Amino acid sequence: MANTEILLESGTNEIEIMEFMIYDELYGINVAKVKEIMMSDKVKPMPHAHPSVEGIFKPRDTMLTVVDLPYYLTGQPTERHPRDLFVITNFNKLNIAFRVESVVGIQRISWNDIQKPDKTLNKGEEGVATGIAQCGGELVTILDFEKIVAEIAPETSIQLDEIDALGARPNSDRRIVCVEDSVLLTKLVEQALRQAGYGNLVQFNNGQEAWNYLKAIRDSEDLLDRASLIITDIEMPKMDGHRLTKLVKSDEKLKQIPLVIFSSLITPEMEIKGKEIGADEQLSKPEIGHLVTVMDELLARGQ
Image (tube, rainbow, N blue to C red; front, side, top):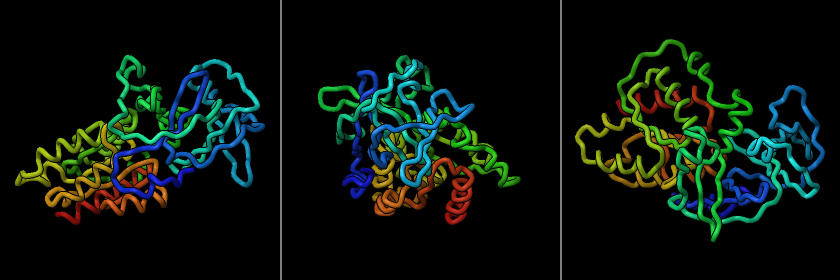
């Protein structure tokens, strides 16, 4: 299911959303994160696990952690039914099963039609909804699955120990453009980069904001001082990272700026797509130490 047509296209600024139901509410996940859908099965509980973790099960030869998504979202004991489904996902190089009640279907929409929830709906800045999409006549809450997993298992997210392992580092005044819509990951990336000596950061919540900035400085004589390197996520409202990459690398002046795609969705299929649109490097979250090393190399080339 993850190998859908959208993965073969380049920079269209579109996404395919798989809609599913939990307690009569409609939620969505990027199809690119979904490996398969299975009927729910018996789960072996694990002692001392996070309350939202049902346990493990082993379809075929793969051991999977099962997350009780209804419980995570509501905090209420889950009414489990034989017809419940497991949505098997793959992102951040992790395979995880999420329990849902039913799958409604797939909708293809533009990232421009996905709105970021305001802070009153999103529990302040740390909400679990990454966007609200209008699909047909329904509003669909697109969940931030990376945040869900990071909250349940913090060790799977960005680890500052990776920066410590790089040893003593000089401070750099090179300006780094960071494009990331997740508040949690923005904070973690910022903290890691500052610790690594990259303190001159300019941050944007989506590709459209970053593109507006880059267009504004495009004709500056000191372009590479105002944008020495770009780091972008893929999944973002308004404009995704692939569309941003395509625009940057299609521009005669902006294409000289090194650009790194730093995303939970880096798979062989996505790597092909990233190469087609000109990304200089593509790295999987949460490999922050690798990101810093690649930044060092790219910036050294341009000196």
